Amino acid sequence: MPRDPVMDDELSDFIVKRLAGGSSEQDVILEVCQRAGLTWPEAQSLVYGAMDNRATDIARWQLPVLLVLGLATVLAGVGIIARFVLVVAAPMRGIAGQGDVPISPENLNLLFWAIANAQFAGDLALGGAMIVGGGLGLYAAVNKAMGS
Image 1 (tube, rainbow, N blue to C red):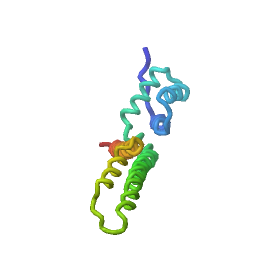
Image 2 (cartoon, one colour; image 1 turned 135 degrees about the vertical axis):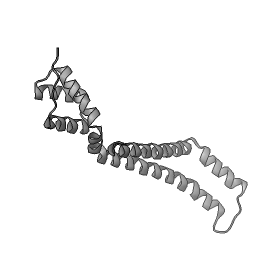
Image 3 (cartoon, one colour; image 1 turned 90 degrees about the vertical axis):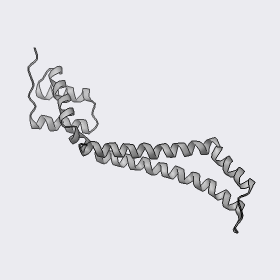
């Protein structure tokens, strides 16, 4: 029958830092076995307990990396959509010329073609998905780090 392992602050900090650094649970359990001389089930209990009790600490350690990744994803999505707008807007300006030209069927056809073009539609969808996904990831990371 396995004994009830006791977690000291040093071991708890070690577990948190390893998990926050991206190590797998299995690797951390093995390291705890070796470091504390525990059996696998005892070390597993400690690692899972630390994951539950110190989830906010782990999230805070990971927050800077997640913020950079989330912001980069959102900005890349904005860039993809901006490229789409520039590709659609440039020909529209060329057709309309410099004066106040009303919307003509040719202009509308070009606009609909640009939107319906598979590459442009894919870019628009990808950019939108990147903005939404990056934003949701940022929101989740910040909430988890704040303990909400």
